[in-house]
Amino acid sequence: MKPFVPQSLPLDEVAWEPLIPLIGKANWQLAEYQGVLTTLPNPELLLAPFTTQEAVLSSRIEGTQATLGEVLKFEAGQEPASEARQQDIREIINYRRALREAEEALRDRPFNLNLLLRLHSTLLDSVRGRNKARGSFRTEQNWIGAPGSTIEQAQFVPPAPGQSLLNALYNWESYYHMERPDALVQLAIIHAQFEILHPFLDGNGRLGRILIPIFLYEKHLLSQPVFYLSEYLEKNRERYVEQLRMLGSTEGAWNLWIQFFLGGLIEQAQANVSKARKIHELYEGLKQRILTLTHSQYAVPLLDNMFQQPIFRSSHLAGKTNMPSRPMVWNMIGKLKKAGILKTVAEGRGPHAEVLTLAQLVNLCEGNDVI
Picture 1 (cartoon, helix red, strand yellow):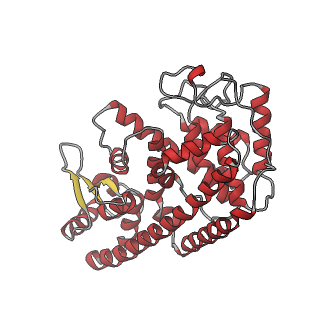
Picture 2: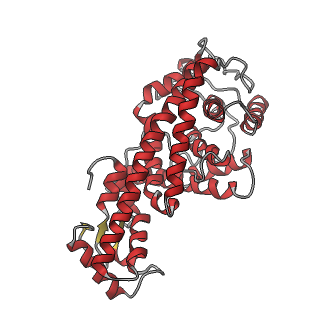
Picture 3: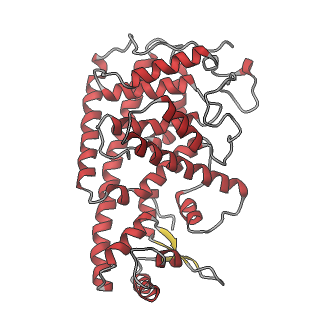
């Protein structure tokens, strides 16, 4: 099978008229989600577990098995049972790091290929794939197929390495910054073209999904890069992969792909609106309860710390700079445990303090009761 020759962007085959209803609905739903973000007192804090859940789901598409709860327990100092699960968790943490790095970088300069290379380096830092040209565009031919398949058995062979790949990347970067009739259609094409180019030996899927909130943030469609599509893509994984594979080989495939992508934006925006509102309601409700229970000026900082890290060791919480003395922290924690706001995940043992969780928040982000 020969390497695929990608189309130059912008595409000249997009049939706009059939897309108009979806374009209108997708933009409206995204605007509603942005409206919810503006009502949150501290979106970065309140949606921190939401960001971790995105990292979990995006990595799950690539085959990892770790859950949000396992990631949070790991960050609280609980080692997973197996080395493989630890590797899963580290990949998820790197995904979250790359998202934050992108947000910080975009405050100073526009997205570019150098930033893409930096994000790839972060994504593969000390995890599986770290020896596969981390932080560099590939200089070898790759292919997509069943595990162990040869290039002759491949389902798809991305563009050949070298100047042709670099030229396609320059074209892709240029298109990223163009003014197009609709930014969400543009995003659908940006994501798909990146997956077609498959410019790295590993990490292409995760990096392609990171591009979605980055683009929406840079285009000022969202005030925070916290729109995550992986829940929808993981739920529709087979169709997602099939729609991408059809591009370039099936007539009308680009329009079918754009319809699928816009449908995902609509569905995910609705889910994100619902979840963000529930998180905000949970925060406000707990704030009043904790203030009533503790009668402390530290009630809100305590709650903020628990939202930022909803599974934690009590000793870590006591060591925070915005927390009072350790005895006061133990006293507040005791009241929250008695009220059922905090649950014990692991009892303290020896030098290790007990592990506690704000279970309502973890379960809300997971979508079901896992703790």
